[in-house]
Length: 379
Image (cartoon, rainbow, N blue to C red; front, side, top):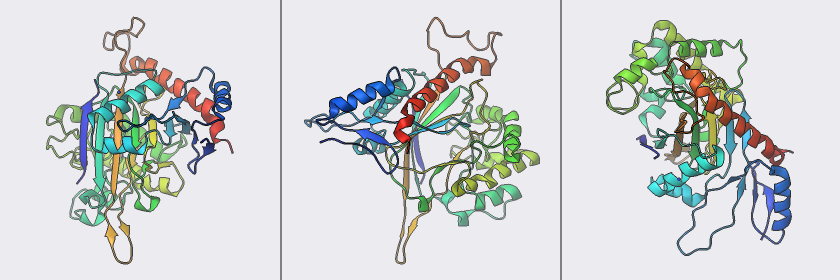
């Protein structure tokens, strides 16, 4: 069963590269030399530190520095491996309120200069390879929605593709996904962005733009204004039935819109073959990506989804596997600072212009941080 919980947030030595390419530093007799190198490297750029849980009575471990790596330009996306340690991931799996607050506070403080929106939201999600939507044999082949039925049977992403401004959340701008457990690539389960860095003439990108023009943000869902209007039960899918399933909404799409949605899903598997962007779950890994561009408009290359989760099989047994993630959705919020732009809706700014001030600054800041950390990933 897929489970999700959403709340609003209202916090001896070695310097070496691990197999994933992340530099980490622990204290030792050569710490001062390492610290001097770091000062020269980072200067005015802040460093990102790992969230570490310490058992009661145990000495606090030394701080570990994590490097931010840009992995895509369009959509703008970044990775930090080992952002949280194993004990913190375990606490988040238990939905610990203290761990949730620590995680949200760390992301805001280390990566977004303390920016905190009153509608920022946290969601814990557990999915299993035994879930109905991960089994292509459970799809009703008698459905009258031909293209939709076929893409659900063969699609790489069991729940389709979406952009994170769906479900009536137009102020949402950036998403932080923390993976809480390891999953090998043969189990699928990766987060895929099939349109990452797609060329401007790519037919898939043109389909994406047409759907967004029609305010459609989910290949299995309805138009944004319908979702916002009809989602009266709080499950977030916009169809009013309380099950969190977007698939029913496709009945509200026109044949052309369904064809565009099917085109996007038909190419989702290309990310597994080296096209687009594919991020494999690894415990403690943080994925950051923007749904909006510098100008505040929705990035048409930010469609993404979770790959179908496949059980581990051997000659004797089939093992059900779990995927566990904690997601922080950040929204544009200017608070009460005197220099923030005029409020949206007073006739001076459209929505995109209003959002662009903060979005552009956050994007610039993270690009600068990743550039400063680039030497850590040099061969």
